[in-house]
Length: 143
Ligand SMILES: [Zn+2]
Ligand SMILES: [Zn+2]
Ligand SMILES: [Zn+2]
Image 1 (cartoon, rainbow, N blue to C red):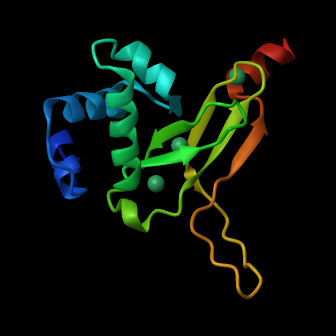
Image 2: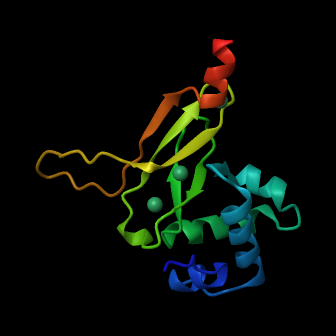
Image 3: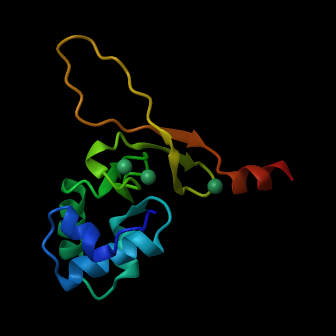
C-alpha cells in the first residue's frame, strides 16, 4: 500500500526546517499548481508573502530537490514539483511549452533521454523542453 506523504513530512524528509511560510508555499505549489510556474505566479497566488521570501523559499526547495527548474524560453525562470518520492534519484521529466497559450506542461511520465557526453564533460543537470502545441490548442486549431 502506498500512501502519499503529508506536506509536512515531505519537507522534513528533504531536510527542511518547517516554518508556517514554507509550509504555506509548499501547499500552494503542491496542490494549486498543476504545471510549471514562475515566481510571478506564486506572488499572485500568495499576495501576503513578500517576493524575496518567496524567492528564497523557491531556492531552498530547489536545492532540496523538491522542485525542478526549467528555462522554457519565456524569460522567466519556471519551477515544477518533482513527482518522484525519491527526488534525489530523479533524472527530470520532459516539458512542453505551448506556443499559443504559453503554458509549460509537465510531462511527468516522459523521462529525459540521457545522452552520452564526450570524455571530460561532467553533466550536472539536464533540461528538456519541447516547443509545440498543447492538446487543447492543437484541437482548437484543427477546427
Ligand atoms: Zn523529478
Ligand atoms: Zn496551449
Ligand atoms: Zn515539470
